[in-house]
Length: 440
Ligand code: HEM
Image (cartoon, rainbow, N blue to C red; front, side, top):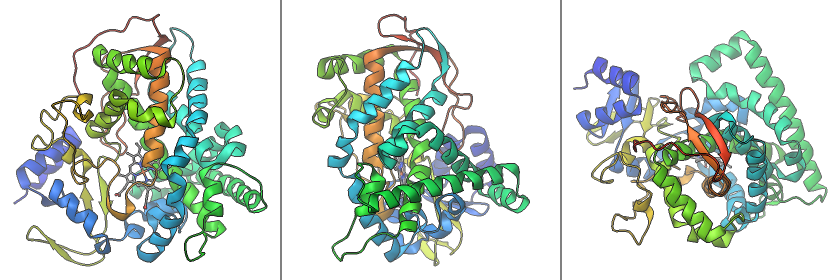
């Protein structure tokens, strides 16, 4: 029997760690108020293997004002499969590797905009820099040239749906200024995307994901309509943009929390890359950097929980779950289980190095920062590339000195530091890093 008050209080006090304690106490399936939690590796396996039980259209309906009705993330069944089949090839390794040079240029532009010794909020700065990087690789060079302006309009459209679903309904009914701003931003962005699709259809060459989706054709000759392409483009940004910047912020926090970690990752960058940006061939040689990115996604998965809405009643672990309930699964909880991850609270990039004794290859239901099943993150390769490129440029070029205590995690998705991540930046070799004890 779940003690409702204790279970809610745990989450309110301790966020996702409270959810972990609830799992420990109540097992892989339990309900708190209107919500049901399916937790742990076996529950993940069940959720990913049974997509026919769930509706994404219902679970993510709150996103529709920003991403439209046809975006993959709000599509089910055969429609989802068709759309996904036409979008996914644009994220193939081969294409993503083609974006690395442009990503490095944008990463360098971000770093160049900082003054030596300047005090900044890295969380804000990474959001700004990664927005530019994402806009260029998704929408191509033409829109990429006005990435900041385009990004401002996008953000107005998307910021609203990042609020609690209940508040979004209130904004819509009351036609609040935030709602009107979101509508104006969405309209401006829609028009630019439609114009870009028309240019690509008229034969104008571009290399972004948008252009690839516009010309995509499946084995049966099916294509995406203009509205579908526009909705996919908006869905990619809505699903991806804040998750990547959240991951970047935590990467820097975890690396600088212990100067030794920063030094080890930097030594690898110096050895493999020197001062040049990474190419596709370099990626598999950056073992430590890869470990840092993976280990951050383990300890601070931006999508700490995600939601499903069952379309029919079903039974899991002997418990009946009714159609229409909100059901949550949690990468965060699974990533902190000692039975899968020895010393789960420790930041250990070496666990991802096949040559290290601590290495163990996790199953897809044990390490799931990008979800799993047919709706698994379509942008995961691009996300990892953006993080790797920005991280390697930071390691090559700057020292960071973070202010202690400036990284209290929020209880929201994606997890961010509540008051930002503040500190000073200096050119490599110029600023002395303060060494602090490791804590995840
Ligand atoms: C570190 C960064 C990222 C993380 C942690 C992340 C995480 C996730 C997760 C957990 C899901 C599945 C949600 C569920 O099961 O309910 C998902 C889906 C998705 N992600 Fe990501 N994501 C990231 C970056 C990106 C990027 C960069 C893009 C696009 C360029 C993107 C586009 C999408 C889309 C479109 C879906 C829905 C796919 C579908 O419904 O078929 N994500 N993401």
